[in-house]
Length: 524
Image 1 (cartoon, rainbow, N blue to C red):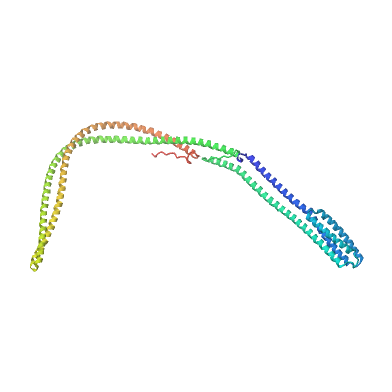
Image 2 (image 1 turned 90 degrees about the vertical axis):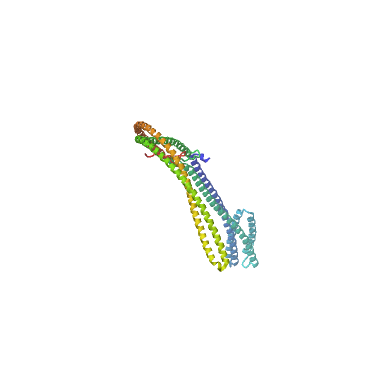
């Protein structure tokens, strides 16, 4: 509700509130001062005169007692007459004070106590009159005692009246002091409340006015710095809110304008970059094509020379292929003979292995017989000792024969494996030689065909060389045009990038914080 108030209305409300607080403080102070004034008036107009009157009555009773004693102690009639005259004056003044006091009494308890005092005072005055009326030596001790007793009773009642009025006056003083303390506290609390309300009202006024203005200044600074990403929060309907709404509309309009300019600039920059890059690539490809055509022309010339040389070489190769076919056929026959020989070697090796097996068996049997002979010689004792020595030697020879037979068998076995492997290789060589003979025949036929084709290629390559020379001339002309187009596209790209950099200084909420960099074309 307060946010919708205008600033002038807020100022008027704040000033009115402060004025109302001032009036309230003045009214409170006036009321408290009225309370204290009433208490002071009560003390000044009632209790002080009452206390003074009672004190005067008390003084009068004391003076009468003194004058009574002076009258008793007087030595002549003249002194007694003076004392009687003074006593009459004191009694008249005291009666007047009693009348004044009686008029001020407003409570039943005090009135009853005053009545008791007047009765006691009357009794004392009667005794006092008897003492003053007696002649010299006419005052008895009993009369003195009765006068003292009556005076003490009246004095005691008077003291009670004095205490009653003293307590009442002190209570009124305490009431006045309490009223003053209450007034001081009330005024202090009122001042604090007024200060608090004034501070809160001032703070509210400062915030309600200063915060929107500060927000407006910050928004203007941010927009001036090119930052359109911030959100302008607007509350209320006052002048500051209207200013913020205007700034928000201005920011939105500027953001749309800058966004449109940025997108168009980026589109132009991208298109110009692509054009420049395309022209640069086209220029490079054109130059490469021209260079390739030049190389192709030179290569075609070399190829023509090479083809002619190949034709001569093909004819020579055809002759060599025929000779190779004859040599391969002769080699095939030789390999066949080698295969037959290897088969014979393999069969002989297998027979040698069988013979070595027989020798190994004989050596084993000889070893067994020598062992049996050694056993029998051991049984014969000393007579068979010489036979045992012979049996031992025979056994040793049999073992060496068996060991040699095993070694020979191992060597023969290895040779047989190598011979078998050689036979396999020779078989493969035979088949390979047969294939070589067939291949050489086919190669001879192919070389003849290549010779005829090479002659035809020489004629075609000569025609291709002429066409490549014409393409090279056209490509050189295209390269010159592409270089001019690339220079124009590069100039357009530079201007578009300058525009993009100028617009990139603005930050928009819909785009990244920083404008994307424009792609640079690849270096030539």
